[in-house]
Image 1 (spheres, helix red, strand yellow):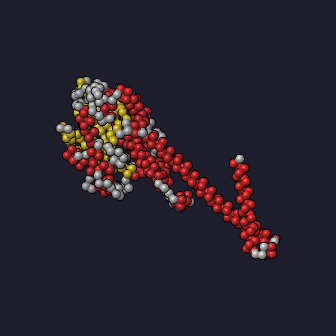
Image 2 (cartoon, helix red, strand yellow):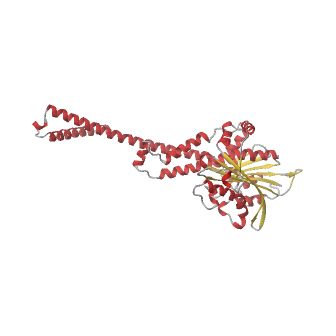
Image 3 (cartoon, one colour):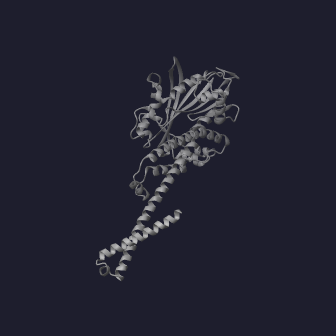
Length: 432
């Protein structure tokens, strides 16, 4: 027998926060952290990490508790939808999770259900209507309230990508040491197939990954600390495969690792991906010289400066150097971050900001040089005028040239020609 606890996760950007009172007739409850719970959590997690969830996030839950069936390829698969959870994170990012539970003897039942339910762009009414009504429509109504111009389709519940992300715990239960169901001898292959949500086989076949690829993926993305469980972190899935794990351990994985570590990492990934996408878009937009001048003078805020300001806020309030005092959760957190490629998003963000900083410095230098040129021109004009007036007092132009205006013009022209000759010679020598 295999017991599955899985969370299907989506995300979208909201324009305003939503309270449970706005979601009638759905029954949502705000998750609050009492003082004793906060103290207990801060004995495990860093204090600022728990403060982030208790003070900066609004978490709402909705109990579903519904048994559903999935008709798929002439078979009927039974699964249980436990609850929905919505995380209203800072900076307008909203995440949600749908808890799925199953007990099976054939893990291909799990694959059939999860591979079908996570493909949000490919839902069909005759197959997925019950799941949509029970699990996704309450979140869609929340989305419609939180977004100024909501999309009509439920695909909008996954802002980037075409499928829900998956966090799953598959626990093999044996009865007096004897497995109840299909036995999968190759645990490495099983872990990979569960993580990639692919058909589970008892041995290698023509559709199995090559030995080289399987070895590479397991070396880079597997966590194996104790003999009775191992984990596998990919971009869109995180899988824990365990063998007779105690109920308290499975609960720790779902209540601690998923609801704190994985959700926070997924928030980082989704926000950074969206931010990098927005930065690339605004950098590609052409801004007039006047708009840039007003921005340099502080009279207009460009979108890119606003986004960079948000990135600074994200770095200060939402990112943490360490989150846990113990070694194993840190190993899990590092694996999750590696699977989600968060470091790549951060590197891309740093490069974009550095390019914009260079471009802004060049624009500022150009603007300063232009202003200095204008000031120099005004100063030069004033100096020429004063010099012309001095000559007119010493040698009246009207007596020597017959007209004061002609005298001023002649002197100004001669001075400009002399300055042009001097400047040209200086530049010519500098080039040599």
